[in-house]
Image (tube, rainbow, N blue to C red):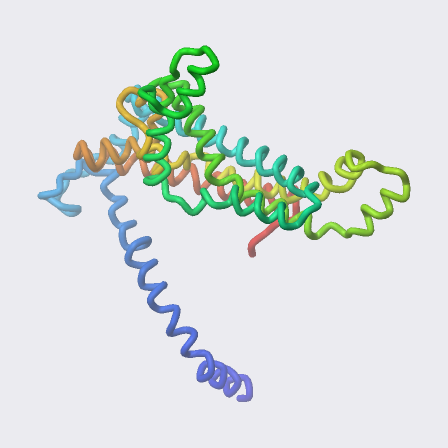
Length: 304
């Protein structure tokens, strides 16, 4: 009886907080769960004028075509490669930058540097895409002017497939490495200062302190970041690629998301586009499960 009274009292005092959740829950249901009914298109020769219930059922035919089309196989490979290189770069660059920033002794300078590298994270790829198009242009772009002053011919960064991949990875790291650095700086904030004092008494210089104290303190969080990143191996960045790519780099720059957009929405092949999207979601779900298991085994990290 007392338990019921306590639960009733809690509900009376917390119902405003539960009510505040309703708009968020409604948005998630409408925009995340309700559209999942459309996955049935992956198994149909979907025709918009016939709808879900009258379109012909073709089973796994769309999935079979996905692995037979040379374009689809190339797109899957591009997605894996670009996403994998992004994961590696997003692990190494923030790790090294956090080490360097940790050695800055003047707090004001440290905060200014951190704020400066953090700012690009808040800019959308629509804005950054326009900036990069101007800076990397072969017709008077700032970067190609510097390349010319060094005595080299202009580089077609956004028109050559190989250079496009490099540009995509480098610009993505430039945009977000400041945000990722915060994770490693937070790990360093938890290091006991007495460990550095003890190392200094033992005669360890800054380099030895970094190797023996700083880097070992960052390794666990680096393991967690690396393993959790496996779930994003098929997320190569639709908004970035969409704002930078063009038909000249489809062969090496097209990814699953842009391919689904072009084939499914622009080309009108909704069933095939949905099948490619379902394939990506299933692989991502599998990798997320594996990554969380690895994070728990290697670093003791778990959400539940």
